[in-house]
Length: 85
Length: 547
Image (cartoon, rainbow over all chains, first blue to last red; front, side, top):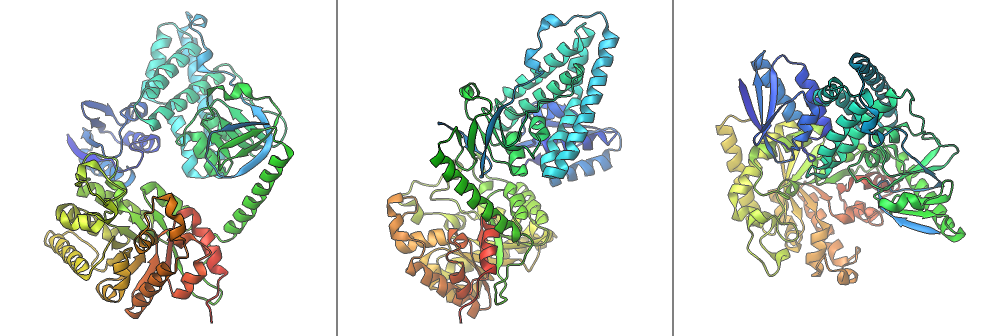
């Protein structure tokens, strides 16, 4: 299991478009990818659930990669966050 | 004649007649009485089939939207396809089906649960997303009922009025026949607003609850998307005024569009840079759309406002990196923190001042609290390798200040070097010339930096001793104030004598009655609000230097 913390920089937070892109991206990997804010954790493939966390600009989230090709998935997902949200 | 006021979302006038849109199948109309069935597998098949049809429709709408409004605005239909396939939504529907409810009720109920939960969120943007859930649920319902939605009104020049329009309703509207949208609800974040903007159709939102009931189908009406006015059955005089306004807008727009993609070059061949002033990452897109040659003023304070604690180096680095990469090697001038006076955040804990405009603000605050300043500079220099960065310091008023600032820059660069973190050694360092002091000693300051950007708003306020926020003082600080223009002229002369470039980033930069004057003074760059870029370009292209 590998995880990283990330501070959301997008003005609108993790809104529909990036959340949708994240769900698509997460479906490409065997690993289970989850996102945590506060005491709530959901799978990144679940679009409504991710949007439902109401993640805003400046929020710190923890992204965890579990199982599958952890190393490669971890790097790819980290890059995804840096480039998109 | 009846007059309504809402929030205009696309500034143009439309003249036409009212067409009220009513919903055909909506989740709110499905009652639990038309439920229970003993045919689980048939209902499941109906649901799967309806979903498939719905996704097929969305694919077609998505393609239509891409070609008409571009990928950006069309993205919502991609999201809708994903929402239809969403695991949680599907689990909720399947759960209801298993309990013996029919497909209609199961979809309507799941739609209601999820849209209500979004509507209850403490965030305006997420509240709007409940409309998306209703939209996809309604779509599946209409596929279940077998009628491919046809909500088409007859005739031309239609002003579509509705309580709210779903993105797909907005998109499936025939643009050759519709001239405006008006909705009772919605916010600037709603898709109606976003799509109307990208389709270039005048629209007004937020008319209020009882608005639809006061309309009659087919009434003549005028929509002014600039002022947010809807006028029903306008009298002749009113109509005439709006026709004039519409013609003026059309002529202006045509002129501006003509300038897209052209160079900022005067009749006698002098090239001027026209850059954009931006105050958020979102503005970068509008800078690009409006053909900005670069960013002339990135107001970094937005990163610090509306929050409870200082932004970290990492957070800032990501923002700067994103803007630099979006601008693809075009120059990006980022102004360091300009907080204090009218822009303030509580966590800075700035002691109360009698006269904040003359107080501990901008560079003064940064020099008083070097830890905040150094964090920002580290983030900036780290980002410098991702594009063409220039760093600019606000409110400089003495040589010593600038020398001190440069020492801190060197210290930060040396730290990065020691940590083996790459940065661009050639990053330009410049200053805002916005105090009369800076303008008066610009000959000396020019030897200490790579560029000047004249902030005319503060320069005018400080030169004329007139508070910018006080409307009664307008007449004392008119835009063609000779004292201010002389300071600008002297600053430009100092810059050129020392071989550095000089721009203007205040409001005066967009005043096309001054463009010729600025070009004659020798200004190299004008940085303006994105929507003014093409207007200023048009003026530059029609200007010739004196003598």
